[in-house]
Image 1 (cartoon, rainbow, N blue to C red):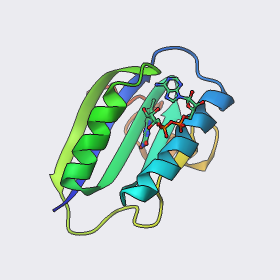
Image 2: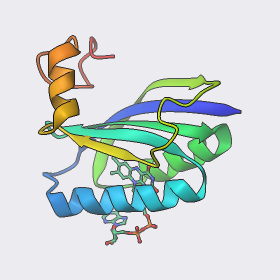
Image 3: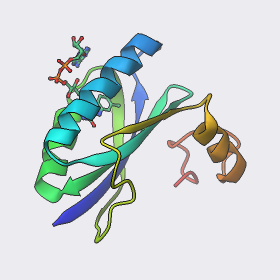
Length: 122
Ligand code: FAD
């Protein structure tokens, strides 16, 4: 069964480009091996990640990610069976606050800033 899981978390410290590149390259390589696709946003010290794939693979990956000490306060925002993937071709597309999607959140989101921890965000 295909599942989509979306969670938010807080970076446990200030992450630089090297930290982020390391997370993204591991994600892209590992996720492709288990046919998980998705997207990740990082801005204002918070992550928002969407994982899509076989439900068992997604729950194994999420459990694995929770053990990463580079982030904390993980909160599942949505977990649902899906019939189609939202991100079918991206093993893990990455967006940060500075690029277009960050601007998109600011423009079209309900929030003045990217803050998945706000109760109104999702
Ligand atoms: P490698 O890719 O071989 O490690 C790459 C580099 O990262 C190495 O330099 C290693 O020292 C460093 N590294 C690895 N783990 C840690 C750690 N816990 N703390 C500090 N440095 C570390 N992984 C996925 O596979 N898919 C995902 O979708 C995914 N999403 C993530 C989202 C977030 C917000 C975070 C913080 C991490 C995510 N990760 C994801 C990373 C995951 O937690 C593991 O670090 C990763 O899967 C390890 O991959 P690997 O065993 O292939 O290590």
